[in-house]
Length: 460
Image (cartoon, rainbow, N blue to C red):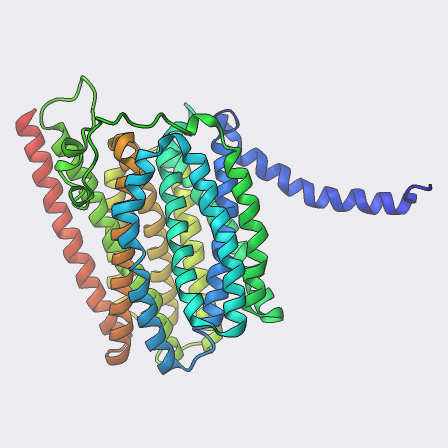
């Protein structure tokens, strides 16, 4: 039996070199600074693949539910979708987080289960999109959203156990986010082309093997991400108390701050987490507002400039660049004060929105979208580091579950505000309203921080 000829061997070798060189370069980046020894590199690669799958699902659903509708009908569909997307998060906060806290010894298998289940749901959604079966499509889409958030909560909770000695928490979170954003962008581009060529149902079918493979790789994460399950008599956190992310978090959950913690330290920690949560919530309100306010301004023809397709592409590109810049800034910074980083991102978003309200064009709209995405990305990285550093492992998943819920509610609230204002006001007035919301939030958080620091100095 003859083997392949010389030219065919050379062609195959060239193809493998073209494909393998970027893969090897990516592996060097994900495994740098000891990330290969602790397992952080594997988590980065897994989360990047997970984000690509989420991008496929998002593009497929957007193509099936939004962009095929007239503008007026699309507004109604978007409003319903925004309200319905809040429902799964009533599950994430009170149930998913505490369950993950109680089953710490099976974290790898929980993460794998969320991925495998999403693969199966994508197969069902593909059939529902093909037959326009809304009864199947919407519940499946909501289940995919819940499972995606459950994965993110688990991933954030295990991050400290995979942290190399040379990488601070903010940098590690940023590295994960940066690769996830790049992968999501590549997935979205691929999904857009596939959707145009074969339809959104085939995009969902393409997501099936990706999620199934991710589930297999999740089980192969290092075993030390699985912590011992809590004892039966260990105090269980009350999710209603965790909703405040305030002074009662550590006390009610039985978090041990260590023998060196002075009296009152728990209250200061709770307040710091609450302030970071408030800043991120304000930025999420702006993010949701910009998405839908600018979208419908463009579709209604109220934003002068290039055609609607070019304008939407420009705004999307600006938001993507801003998100990447936020992740890159987080990966480069070694700041020991993520609280200040969170407040700085809110201040930056406020200034950019005020400036765009006074000079409103397609270019200033793109600029505020870029700055808003930058603030959202960097602010969330700093917030995650605060929770990972200050909240004990026994309630960390619950805290992240509460955070995901509140941030989603903030984003939906901003989206509904943008949807409503796009019916009645022009661009400058709408951005003026958002500027006032951000300025009031920033002023309140600065006052709270000043009071907290003064209380800490008095009790020291």
